[in-house]
Length: 327
Ligand code: A3P
Image (cartoon, rainbow, N blue to C red; front, side, top):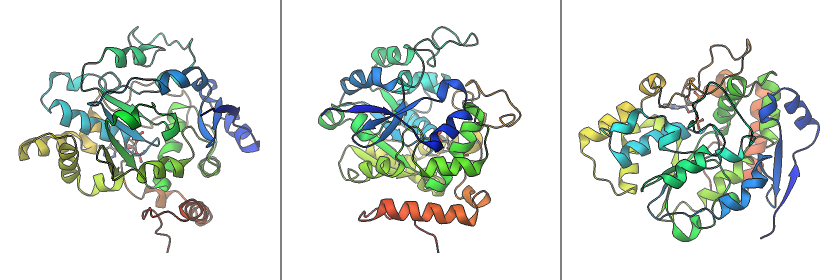
């Protein structure tokens, strides 16, 4: 299929770009589908599409801020074992971010980073090329942009979704901390609902996996399920990946993946990622609250109504049953 790239444009986009660090301003839409990605994606599109997928790969795929890191760490521990000596290695080395190189400028440099840091251009791609099986790989890419072999080779895919209202709040604080976002949440809500953020559109991202949820190589999980009963989700992931775990191992993994434990774990808490240097970003943590329903502390009635209209519009004709509790 032939695709085309267009800059993401319009007054809202102008406003968003004015309030971001330079490195994360330029986004493009891939058509068909109006899929929002970083401008560098164009140089990586074909390479990513042609990426050799292995049957025993394990992919964790999400829309950003849906509990990706949480599911990555849990999955890695299930695959490799909770006692594995590499548990303390940075997650980006153990569980590379598939499209990372297409999110950064090819000349990106940061003196604070070691030469092999996965954040530096080309390193993530190298990590994936040299990884032994089973490879564990993270992606936020929309279905049409994922490797073609994904649908033929059928590796294991764990997809995690989260209430868009909580995703939006989490994405806002992420933008303030890591992307130098300077405006208020009210503006950010507009950007989010306009689906101009990286890896938008939100609903087609989820629904493309929801429709595939019954395929035996796909596990569809909600952030809210993980919050409600982490032990059951660890067991579900283990069953899905064909791993026999003792009751004690399940408990240990759930404990290791608790919010308290992950917040203190340098290998996963992302505190080494370069943060914006301004008052607004000061003190914000990547492992922020880890709660369900934090949106209730932030959204106004008008914003909640806007979320409702947006959600109902995009879910029309779909059997997706969640996140419609507005009465
Ligand atoms: P909040 O900002 O709402 O706290 P991602 O990894 O996709 O970027 O998602 C980040 C969100 O997942 C953040 O949400 C973060 O706190 C939450 N999170 C990460 N690990 C968690 C854990 N062990 N328990 C609960 N939430 C977790």
